[in-house]
Image (cartoon, rainbow, N blue to C red):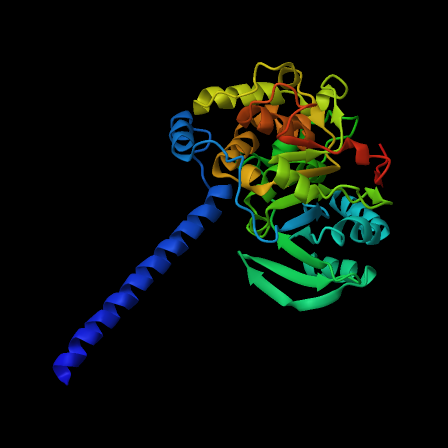
Amino acid sequence: MKRRFVPVLILFVVVVFSFFLSFSRFHVLSEEKNNFSYSNSNVCNADWLKKEMLRMGPPLTKSVFSSPPRAAVISILGVANNDADSQVLFNKHLSELGENFNRLDLYFLYPFKMDFVLFFPADVQFIANVTLISFQLDWKELSPPQQLFGTTIYSYFTKLNTVVKVVGRPFPLPHFIQQNLSLLDGEDWLACAGRKHSLSYNLYSGAAFVFHLFFDQVLETYDFTFKVDTDVVFFSQPPDNPIAAMMKRECAFLHTRIWPGNSHHSCQENAYESMVEFSKLSGRQALSVDYEWCKNTDYFYGNLVGLSTTFFFSPAMKLFSKWLYECTRDNGYFRHRWGDQASYPIFLCQWLDIPDIRNNEQICDFSSWRGTVFFHPE
């Protein structure tokens, strides 16, 4: 009896040990994935950058989708709790969301079975802010708050049974600014559409959407994300299903307007030059670098855009985004107050061969929606 028991015991120990090793490796890989987003200090080192890019390869443009495909509309209510303008920005977006959300749900979320994911800064006001917005919009609790992916998630459902996830997360500054906060006092850090420099708006308008959220593990569970600003007002259901259109045409990006690059040049000042520098340092030639739209940096109006997560949340895209955030220093996001408008075109220029963004199968053009499906005060 004992002889028969010993081999079984040994087998059990081996299985448990193997499971432990596998779990430990998964845990370590998960930690590496999380740490890469903010703590990797090598990203500005050209040799490291080139090795990493060679290891990663370019972003994928084709995907195997969930069944049914999963999509979410995303929005952010403020990002910084240490800036004088942060409460003003939060109140503005809170008011807009309160006025416009039910229309968004009726005409966009509910018809196409999308979730709504709302981000708040994970600060001392987080719980109060969540309570305020859920009460104002009459959201019902779907489940108790969860600790998932290192963050707190509140889940609700609307009157139309749309799932709402409210996520608290940090929006840290680039390391070079964290190490010298006096940089934020520079009088020449303004530009773009006549808006005065502020820490809150710099983070919110650009970096929060095209850097921080590319690393968000909640959003990685979706096939598509649609950024819809809080001041967008829907008044009709779109005639086309944007999810089905992006799947059928294998679109990496969906937009609702293109602005000529010379119309608001300060909003993407030095973006093209930064992309060229990244291409040289990483050893990855930008595929559309010689086309006029890229050199002139035509950009997409950012109040309603759609992204393929396979493409935009890929390791190579995250690396490019992190390099822009950490390494352009006084010639990028903060000095020139880049919005997300500055980043989307150079992401596409770097990784896709697109002779003309106004007539391309990899970019879904839904500019016909503007004025017929939704209104935005421009």
